[in-house]
Image 1 (cartoon, rainbow, N blue to C red):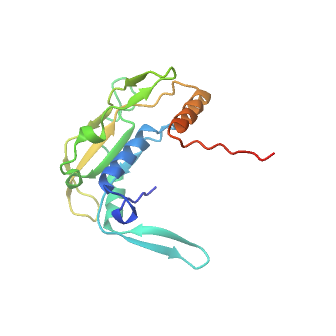
Image 2: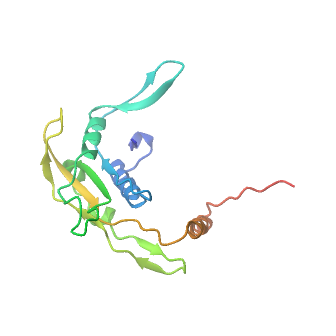
Image 3: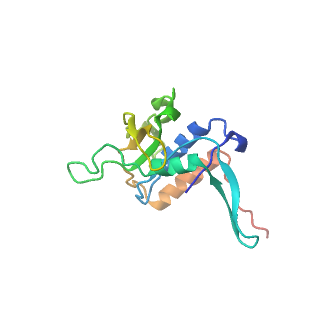
Length: 184
């Protein structure tokens, strides 16, 4: 899957928004896909491929290739823990130059959780920033990369029915719940 964040498409902070979405994808990995997410920026070309009858719109360019290669880089952490469980549930990789002055705690602050009884609690932060390191991707000059890994795992604590009720309650609070009104 490729997601494009651009000021031309309304993003105020394309890199920051990409990191926030990557974090959400990692934390909402209910089916344990263990996503490896690559982020890169730069000039791209948006174009159509195919014929007049059947075509697709896509994005082409060096940042697309770099993001794909970043997504394929394994982190420098063991694959499993001493007890045999996976050591991470998500990896976000990007060129170190992209990170710049961004603050890890700003993007990966501990989340809060509202229990079914309405109590709010802060959850333990499971994200870890790994040190920058050199990487030589295929057909691209060597670069310094940075990785952030999620060492937490999703274990459902509520039934699907309870989760659906919580989502509807949150939508109502945000005034985003508009049930269909059936005409008599």
